[in-house]
Image 1 (cartoon, helix red, strand yellow):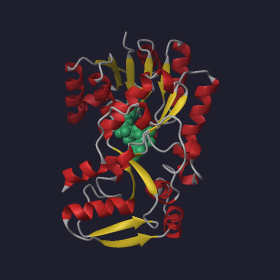
Image 2 (image 1 turned 180 degrees about the vertical axis):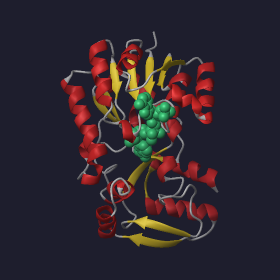
Image 3 (image 1 turned 30 degrees about the vertical axis):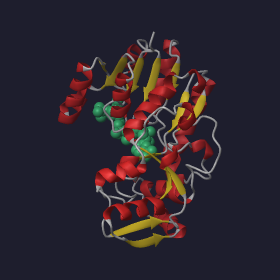
Image 4 (image 1 turned 30 degrees about the horizontal axis):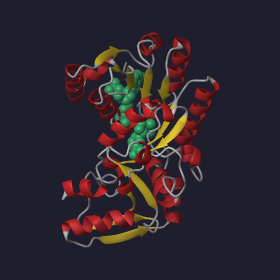
Length: 303
Ligand SMILES: NC(=O)c1ccc[n+]([C@@H]2O[C@H](COP(=O)([O-])OP(=O)(O)OC[C@H]3O[C@@H](n4cnc5c(N)ncnc54)[C@H](OP(=O)(O)O)[C@@H]3O)[C@@H](O)[C@H]2O)c1
């Protein structure tokens, strides 16, 4: 019988895609949501649509341990897609999983670079990457079966705007290039993140492993992305290059949390924490049949 999957943070940016994928792939899908979520029109519509597709809505909050435990007791797999502000709250999820004693797999909210292979974790990122690593330690010490998903860069965050902070569409005149622009990163479209996450969550091969999301056509440098975009719009953009020292200076001089974007930019575009090392569990090899969205296709939609 198909595993029952619970998604925490289902109404969040990436949680919505994971929830839709869980339903589309035929798993009995449960979502744990705060009652207040329904006050947001878009979230209420999303919840109505997934309910109509067969999902079970469980009301509760991370602050209400009894509601969390009751939700976790109903399922086989727990996927946490809670946001950066709730990473620490996942200690309560770990407690509830321990108490329930029935969960076959837990996927904590990672959804980015694998912090365990970061060349360096800047102090600005300790509250995110450092904390995610501490959570892993607690999960492993508790003997909780798990899978960590290293999804790399969300397309909506890093491709839709060619990695230009504060922009929501690709630039047509000028572009900022981080470092020399040649570092390879990995871009993954959000619907594909949903699909790969669910496949990784139920796959016996990925138990207690880190799964890397690396669609082969989406391993690109910022220069390659910009070149592709220039071809599509038939125009050469004016480029300004920001050297590593300038990015580091911005991180130092900008108060936390406003320096997070620069710190993440540094680890993806300069440090190169997403590519250039061998991995054992790669979605490209594990799930070659998934028809993913390529960087080229994604940019074509934006022309
Ligand atoms: N790789 C990348 O490019 C990238 C980009 C962004 C984020 N990320 C990572 O992706 C993960 C998810 O982030 P996100 O931005 O998708 O999250 P998000 O949009 O901030 O969503 C947070 C979710 O958590 C829920 N939540 C908040 N407080 C809660 C509480 N007390 N009890 C129960 N639920 C609560 C929210 O529900 P409500 O609807 O009730 O508010 C919402 O569904 C994080 O680990 C983040 O670091 C990666």
